[in-house]
Image (cartoon, rainbow, N blue to C red):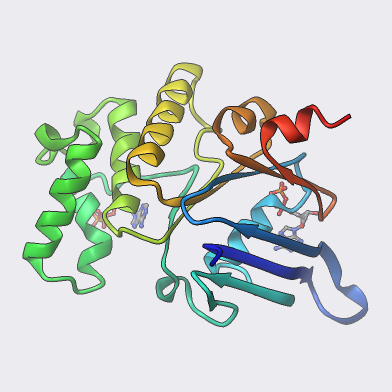
Length: 229
Ligand code: ADP
Ligand code: ADP
């Protein structure tokens, strides 16, 4: 069973004669544990596609399933996903522990289980010694890891990354890319990662879903995409 299935997925903004179709029937199956990068020029529909998987954008046609369950009508909180954004703003007055625990607290998880989840994520991200600090006492790389920690503690079936590297300076971008690769190696969570950067896509992708003007042009390994005769 595919971790994520997109079946003839269509997106239109607006209604009636004013409607603008921006996704034209995307069909794709993402395997369990796979790291797929959605890549293409600005405005081609990458972010819209990701936001439909996340439940942040209504699906105009077709179907999206996560773990075999159709999610078209489910709220983000009822999908087994966690999203890592470009603007990862942490709560400045909360400790690293509370930043990571926040999403679990609002879901009413028992404190002992929250403690366990946060400790486990902190160990993976090497944040164990920083849990009582606040974000302003951290380096840029450490803050970035806390932002990922907030997603990891949810132990979701799917990670969604919306250009998380694009606002970072070169050094932090390289660091965070390595961190994401390490996380994927260790946790093996199915991931969809959006970027307009071809090099980033090639470096991270097991398969690339290449979008152009709302159409899926190719879906294959970087070798297949770049060395097609
Ligand atoms: P990308 O992420 O590849 O840059 P987007 O998914 O953001 O592309 O946008 C795809 C197309 O949909 C673009 O033409 C964009 O202008 C349009 N679009 C995005 N969001 C909206 C919206 N809320 N209302 C109308 N059009 C939108
Ligand atoms: P305070 O209680 O002093 O307003 P909070 O810790 O609740 O402080 O929030 C601090 C800042 O973090 C606010 O500017 C808020 O907009 C922002 N913020 C709140 N929720 C989130 C979130 N989920 N992700 C990122 N930033 C957030």
